[in-house]
Length: 526
Image (tube, rainbow, N blue to C red; front, side, top):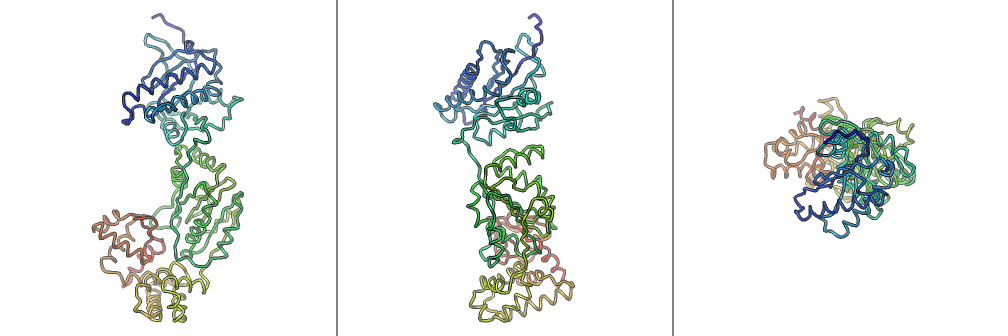
């Protein structure tokens, strides 16, 4: 054919989501193609454009269309998407799920060349690259939208940003890495009716301890928050004092105040067995829990996280934070949301810059410590040997972690009087202090319990303390110990009952970092 002049045209590429899915029969695919063409024709017509005025090429499960220069580019993003959605809805209302349509639409403008086979050019290639971007596919797949729209940087800068009918903030930037193309683009999920929105409501809170006692003043301080105000409650205090237990108990009690979900992450800020969790990794986990795509650009991920909180009431628990820098990108920033942070550090920057409320958590009062001991041993047994109970509490330094370990083990030894328990704990503490010059109350409790383990349980426990990660399941533990999963599960169950490890989810275990450290260090002593 004779050479034709190069044209600058608005270019659209349309694709059916999941066209080749194994769940779709040939008849379904015929219905999808027919519906796609009907929807595209109707949308163009209702946008003031005749099908005959467009250059259209079939692409199997999609369409390439060049719009005439007379069509205002703004109508492509102002009017055409809503018309497409209306046409898609009409099709879907009369077809089975396998024959219902969801589309991806890419928009660009640039020069095109004609040859004997149709149109060609880098602009045509580009529009198909952004149509095929993983971020667009993920965004559509994780939403209830019937349509995912992506526009090129040129189209966004020259058309979208200047549209009087459209809010450019509805678009978000993505990174496109397809074949030879690496560039940014902008996506939008237009026209989702409110009654069709599906919102993932995360429920990530671990179980709280059933043996929690006291802390009434601190619980009231946490409860004294206005759900319409952003308040960061920073709970700091020494290791093992019960910061996580307090935060989780209150979070469960207050969950109904945050119906749009509760997010939780252990940031491992002071765990010597693992690096602190990077803010970006924690943020990716939150986005995944919310059913959202994870942008490659960290700033875009933070922006998506902030936008998602808008008009929601959510609770975020950031446990065991190392410092304010680790926490800051994860804070809930919208009115109606609340963040609870636990840390051994004071996190003063959060108080200064974010207006955080600080709750300083101390060791248990004598009456609270006695009540905790009574939860394991029975209040009658504690009341009958009050002086011995006080000695046990003193040996544990009024520290909930140490007291829980000692009490859980004492509960398995009903043959011992509390005076005998107190004497054994005193002797263990003195032995540890003589050998290690260490008055940490957790070490005597851990050492006392470890001495009562069977040789095989002690061997497995030491291997786990040395080699297991921040959390682990039965298969991993069995592999480290060289035992069967059934044997390992029984050992882990016993260690959990002894409070030497925590089963924070069914079949998933973790160490308190102080307990792990104590288990390793007391092993040095005979």
